[in-house]
Image (cartoon, rainbow, N blue to C red; front, side):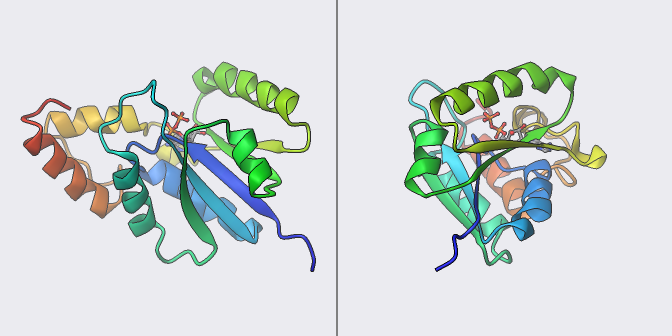
Amino acid sequence: MPHKMRAVYPGSFDPITLGHLDIITRLSPMYDEFIVLIANSPEKSYLFSAQERVELVKKSVKNFKNVKVDIFDGLTVDYAKSKKADVIIRGLRAVSDFEYEFAMANMNKTLNPEVETLIVFTHPEYSHIASRMVKEVAFYNGELKGLVPQVVVEALKNRIIKKGKKA
Ligand code: ADP
């Protein structure tokens, strides 16, 4: 059987934004399987649980037949190896993202030389969108349309009201 080309797109996705979705839309057709990998680091605190983040991604990508969603709390390269994935996809919004992505790609290359990191420039329309800022906008009741998928608009509103605005 020919080797399936697999890509892993790792991140917090807390929550998924239109910027993430744009990367998934543009890159997933290039692979047989495209896995959105939700990081669940015990060191980080998230607004949405890993399971909630998975559900929000799943609902946002339901029309993409080759996109899978998974949770992992280890090193992305170990996950990539276990799934026989070829490529780790990361997005680059601005120069400020560069050093972190560069360091991470080099570390991953050292840990597993067989996995490539592919850095993709964000669509200019989405380069200002970051999950952290989206949460801030939601907290102050700002307009979320144009920043996140509709399911996330609703989830953010519910979560922030429920938390008594302690986002
Ligand atoms: P992390 O905590 O790993 O940075 P994020 O969920 O913030 O997780 O981001 C996951 C990946 O998506 C990263 O490569 C990030 O650069 C990319 N990304 C984040 N926001 C955008 C956006 N607006 N457009 C394109 N890529 C983005």
